[in-house]
Length: 54
Image 1 (tube, rainbow, N blue to C red):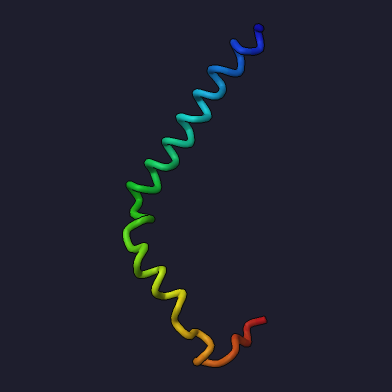
Image 2: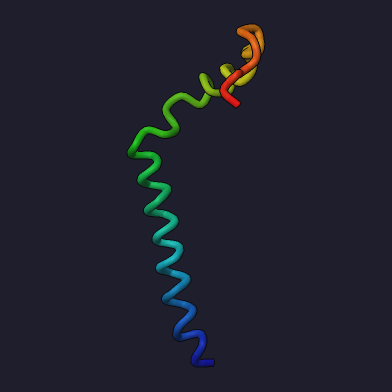
């Protein structure tokens, strides 16, 4: 039963860390243009030729 005394605060700290990381991604603007990203993946990027940087 004493393990609960260690795991409960640890899980709360972990959850707060995840929430803080999510809040940081929102504040840094990582979700500003999701529609543009979805349309860019559909563009024909092979029309320019193969990538020779291998």
